[in-house]
Length: 140
Image (spheres, rainbow, N blue to C red):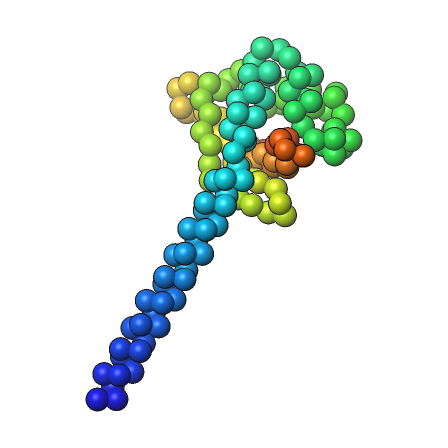
């Protein structure tokens, strides 16, 4: 009788723990989705500005902190080193939250899908809009 009672309590505790874990995960997932609104249009605008040759407009989509650390010339050199004209497709990865910033890995893929360029974009919310706070190439 005691063994059955222990087993029943253990099963209920396990189910309760699983429920709490799923609830926690769901709340965090919803929070992430809600807080990340506006990032996809920003990414699209950033790459559209670069594609149309409006590099200064793309540069202004970054935070003031980014512009203090990366001047316009360095930004141009960085973009030139990426050889963005080789890539046609963009695939977005899973966003991560760190210190009230969202980090998103974007994978640029060539048209033939043989080469890939992963970039980590860090986004920071300034007032009510998102801005790019860091761009890094991902080393494997």
